[in-house]
Image (tube, rainbow, N blue to C red; front, side, top):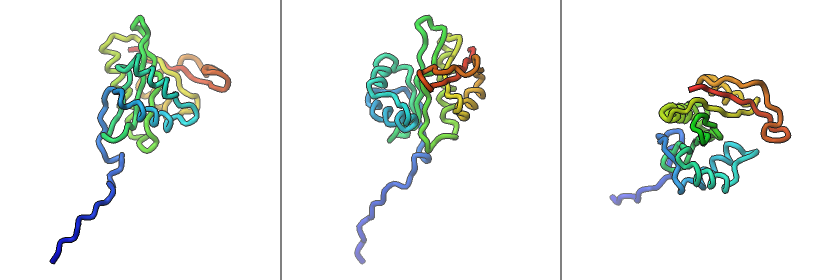
Length: 166
């Protein structure tokens, strides 16, 4: 009896099955970070050069979720020069993994780091219609600062500002 050659099948492991590592961004991640941002924010993703500049200036302020093959989430956060206030500039999770607590995981790590640094306040903006993000931020203790800020990012770009005291 002759042994048949082994058949190779494509991996049936989905991204949801692979463990995710939370780590700092590295330069080699930039193309993948751009892909992720375009998926998460198809209407207005960052340009590649903006992510490049964010990396060049704030590499220690970008955390990613990595499964060893792809990035599935990131958070970009920047502290003011006086060290008093931090702004969450962007939080994104791939569509296939939303609703699994990954945004919370990223935010909790950011808040842990900011507390250790002595930051006093965290601020962010959110679209008034983004119920999932608002629910997440409220569950972390963020409160609204005023109502809807009309045209915050330009015509038709309304935002709500949320703050959290540390």
